Image (tube, rainbow, N blue to C red; front, side):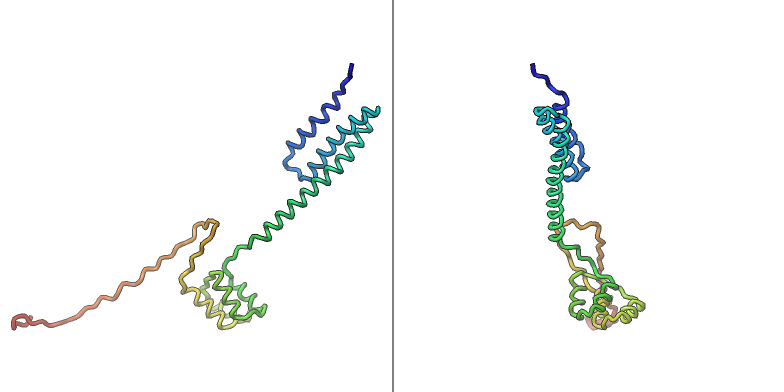
Amino acid sequence: MIKRNPFIGGLFIVPTILTCGCSSLSNTEAGAGAGGLLGAGTGAIIGHAAGNTGAGALIGAGVGAVSGGLVGHAIDKSEERTAAQIAAATPPPRGPLGITDVAQLAQAHLSDDVIISQIRSTGSVYRLSANDIVWLKSAGVSDAVIREMQDTANRVPRRYYSATPVYAQPVYVVEPEPPPVSVGVGFGYYGGRRW
């Protein structure tokens, strides 16, 4: 009659339960844990055949944990590379330039044409006060760029079309002024009579 060891059967069930229930673990941690448990089970079976179940389970657990950890670490690194490639391929959102951004571009000695092009391409709109203009001049911003910034307040905003949804942007409607009413005084003649 063959004598079965209940410990050996449990070694195959426990790794399956642990790897399914630990979703918060990294692949390295999960791989090391699952590999250690599977290695311990395999080592226990081999050790049982050789006459030393405990030593076989201990050696198998060590080898399995190292092997599972290495495989899990390779998967983690692959996922990190994929995430970095996706982040590099996605352009950062371009928002309007603030007046400090314009000052930084001027202090970096970029040409007026480049700064003006950036203002236009980002759809930036400025309503400069007298203090803003004085500050921009002290920061080294040229008169041409400041004039461009002032002109943005009178421009019709451009329409942007995007694949991503745009949420709650204000819409401004400016009605034209009605034409002036003309009032006149005149004389008329009808049938020789004067009115």
